[in-house]
Length: 406
Image (cartoon, rainbow, N blue to C red; front, side):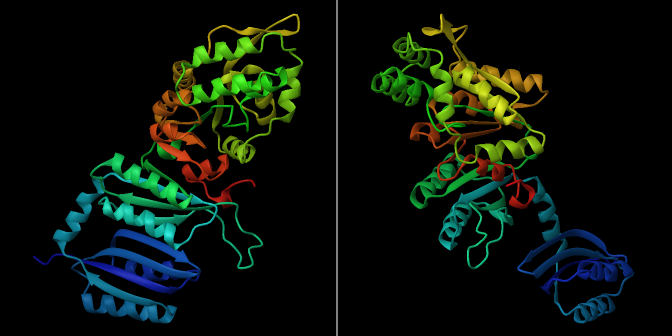
């Protein structure tokens, strides 16, 4: 019994409305089954691929002849490649292979960056299926140049060693001044719904306790303890107690003065504005202080704030906090609690932080991002952003510039 033919059809040429409709209408005349289809357009130049099964009732010669004539009328090139049934079945079996998304970000991208990243992808046995540009188009005169550039690669396969792959990407990042993220491409990745931020040096461009210490005249002492804690050299609870004791007696009115002069980090407001538009819940989970977190909550529409409450008596800081200290373990616990309250899997959660005390929180989130962090934190986190602002996180969830509010 004669078997249906499997044919790969390739169409290329200038893009125009109705081109795909015309080709597929011709296929419909012969009752062809479309087994796969894909199309891309770069600078108005189209490439269309259609894998079809031609019924035995359709004679191959008139089928191909009519398609070629259709392509001629459309002014495009069309070619055919017969596909062996065995090769087709191997292709079908490959659909179970793991897929990952590799995201390349920088102020601007060039061929050297693309070559380095795609070289590592190939060397680790992964195949690129799709490449998308998420950032906006740029005029030749640079008048509308996007603040950031981003290309996203959809890759298929299982790397021999994922840790080695990530290390190679980190090395490229350090050498070329770009950021590279690799995520498993699954339903959770496409359905993130909660983003939790550390506050100090993540959402805001300062360590609040250091700013309070400067106002109290003990800046150097507190800063030294802060740096040691950020490097993971001192237990966070102990470091916080030591620093707060140095602030004992500071007027509570100083909190407002300090809050007014601390700016948001680059891209923070744009990121949160757009995440809220897309239905995300936003949380601050911080080892900092509720006074500052609540001001951000009012300003940015943040849904949850968990931080340390400074103890105040007679208008002065006592050098202590009210209740349990929010340390590394507590941050992870709070993140779990919020996710459960929102009815979310932790795979649907993004966590962003810069310090060693953020690592447990980053580790349990589906997407953990070290933001402008120390090397030990970059290494321990799943992903890192070191060259761009917070709004570059929009690219990591697959959002294009054209879909955002600037």
